[in-house]
Length: 126
Length: 239
Image (tube, rainbow over all chains, first blue to last red):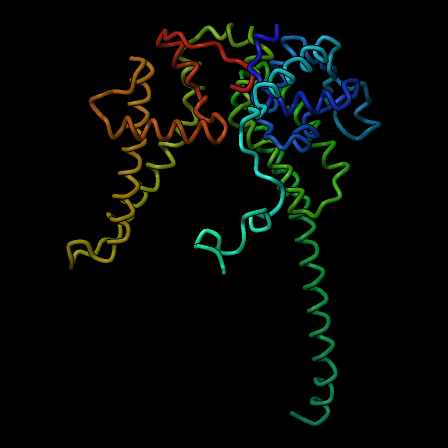
């Protein structure tokens, strides 16, 4: 089933948000803000995730007159979705992991690294 | 003016000025309250527009669902009016472009049951028509203004600005129409038309730009594909 879903960075962000607390219900506006993606991207993703059974939605059970607002739709991750999403994100992170031979820059400003002084590129200051 | 009047006026004038300034302040406050109250409604209005792009039977359900998000936002929002306005627009504006793709996944049966292809095409091409109209109408207005106000003493009179504006707008409109034509032909043929490389390139560029700003040209390409009988890859999440 996971093959039906292409895990883009946006999808991964949404899944990550769900996986933070899989039992916690989320709603659209809140996810739009927390995932920093537009509602236009979010809702089709939610619909597709729901279609493959990774998440389930339900309408909030409130009395609109008492609460003073309409009932929202809540999305919760399903157990199947939790498993599948974890696997999908694992695969994604494996795919994105830097190869071991990649020259990784050390932390900090290049000027403070060993061998690099002010003006090194121009023959050094001495 | 007698001395008595001078004294009376010198007392009344500051009181009058104070009264007017207080009244003005009260009025300004009322206006600001009114505007602030109305600002919150803009989000709902945009949401209504977004839902207008959906088949009639879906509109109300989707509107209620999305309006609930705005309701909850406004109930808990502690931000200043402009920030609140930003978030209330940030939510519905992208839905103007993507509401349909969401609804197609949620309620595919409704879209399959849209039997009349002409109705589908008309609905899908609405944004195009708006675009063309938006381009053409200033041009036509400018042309009419030029006809009405041109100075017979000189070839173009003082209406040269309108002529330039009209030319510009008509040119933009023609380009928009050509891009649309190229787009439709591209969909039918499966490739960009070679007879109009600049237009094809412009169409491609605009499609690219639209994709970048959130798949906006879904404006009905799906309908066009269907009408043209072109098979397209099934959409996947995030595509």
